Image (cartoon, helix red, strand yellow):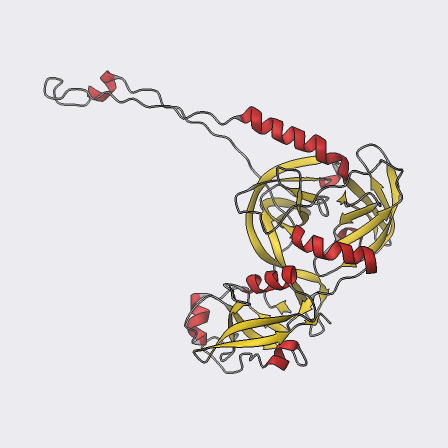
Length: 385
């Protein structure tokens, strides 16, 4: 399954500010200064109660305690390849020596060095990769007691506005901590794996954050304030200034719910198979697009293309094939409005549900709008080719 509109890549920023505003009571002279006559108008006494200051000391204690507890499990990864040297971040997954990072950090590596905050430096070996979600597992042989695995949290329980922390190796500055919030959930990014028809598959369930992430943060953990990993920092939307990518406050992280499904299989077999539907869709319908297509609503995943031999074709899903007032949008396709009874507002909702909840061979029920009629279609998912 892939989408047509590619998304910009690579990582996010945070600006946390605590502001307190205290108003001084307004004097009687100030209140009566502009009145015609003090005898005609008695001054009104206004009492302003200042808001209490946020408890910055408690916030500080929470963050410092979190860093002291978690940072021993965050590593820097030094990479050598035929094209030169690179660096990234990662974190300890278990006491067996498995380190999680991004695939793009270790891609084409000829040698890996994993550096721990304790000063321990070890050679690493890639034992599993997932190009669809940009995950890699590296194995090190560490002395007993040298590893501090980080606990995994819940992506489903994560809420927009919740505070998060990123720890990693931006620009080679190991052990850097930044703070932000969850800006959005359920985003989609291009996968790193090309689809047979051209373009790239899509990766879903992506977390958007404004916690400052920069080159070198890739592969490091995004954590909640309990010190649980909720994502792997993967990408930013960036401005390029003088050849350097600069953070503009929009970063993306692989959802930990994907990590929990994928990593055990990468350790066991070295690969992971995602469910495959076989459609192409826009991420979101605009009002103008819906009007051009003659659709009764702007929510849903509109089917632009159905791949030959795919599960969607076998189930009878219909792609747009008629001309419309928008030459780039063929009309007459199915509009997917629900999957297994869950509303689909945008394509990312469908993709996120499949990636977190389904495997190849599972059945799903799509609710589609076809020629103005609501219809349910049962599909047996395949695996991405």
